[in-house]
Image 1 (cartoon, protein in one colour):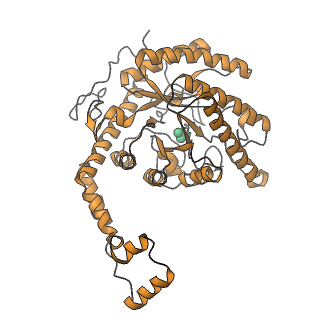
Image 2: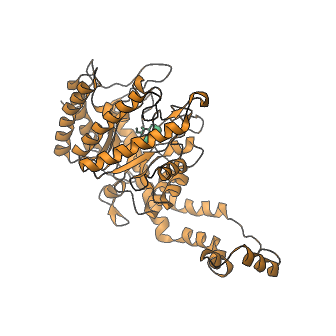
Image 3: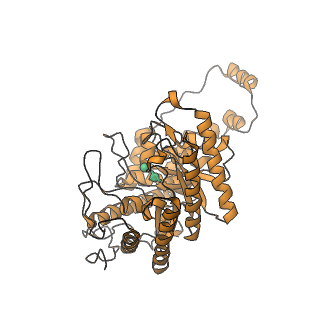
Length: 437
Ligand code: XLS
Ligand code: NI
Ligand code: NI
């Protein structure tokens, strides 16, 4: 039986619509910068939050009303949940989903039994994908929930935890390939540490690199050609996560010879937790060729943890889309809503409100970004700000015609630098506002 029988396929009704179950900006067929919105965003529903989020927090149990859930998490229950998930994505019109191995099928007493459970549920996922045309943006393995990973997985002091994680990722890669996934994500979960006293950092990072190389090698062996992503996050669950931010991840990939195989999956609120804005992370990764995919969400500036709220800020979406358009678009990545409902929003319909809001926010953000690019005024102002590098000594420095001695001579002759010009931050902000309201 359908789980959302009272909810229709969400239509696009345009900006004046007051229907909460409609899109005001996301029209999947509208072409922006040469691609339909559907192709631009490649929106993805995160299975772990949307289908497995219970609303539990450290002070109380789950609150979510999910009438399709059975009393026990059996394979049958998991298979039924898959059907509900696809009904949801179909009605929403989201063309992709993402999952961890343990989101979709229950873990059993042994790895062999767990793999069997996974295979049984993956069969149903495959059926539902074929029925709906919904595709897998990326797969991943949960290497952080089970107590065996309390010290980490690839960076654990327990070699057996590493071995178990390897077996798990091997299987997750096979499943991702079987489902035609466009990518595979490494998020470091517990790959970090709580205290320096009990931690051999070099050994742990060497192990993490060896682990990633094994994954890359195995992908090659089985012919999995999807994109690998590394997802930065500075803290939570551990105090010091090794994948702190884009810069730390890129440095790690370079240090260990993984740059040809792995790009970054950047998450909005992880950037905030690292003390950056997401546009900083996107641009930093982008200019070095590591821009991969985005986990779209937002944090709460009054709270210091990963609240994973749905994005509703048009400025934020515009900045994300500007960055992606600048570096050639999102594919094979996408916009994955790594976001969850508040504990108080416990009814199934809230899942629709949340995703509709996020998709509309990004659609409006894309329109703003495209308009900014089409008008070119901000780009002209930016170029003007760096005008001193377009000719004269600036151009000569950029083309390698100078050294300290020639620059000393230049400045001794000139006496002092040209006076600075205003940075015009407020004007830049006002011009951005023209496109938003
Ligand atoms: C947790 C991460 C996680 C990854 C996938 O904070 O965002 O959800 O995206 O393992
Ligand atoms: Ni994420
Ligand atoms: Ni997160």
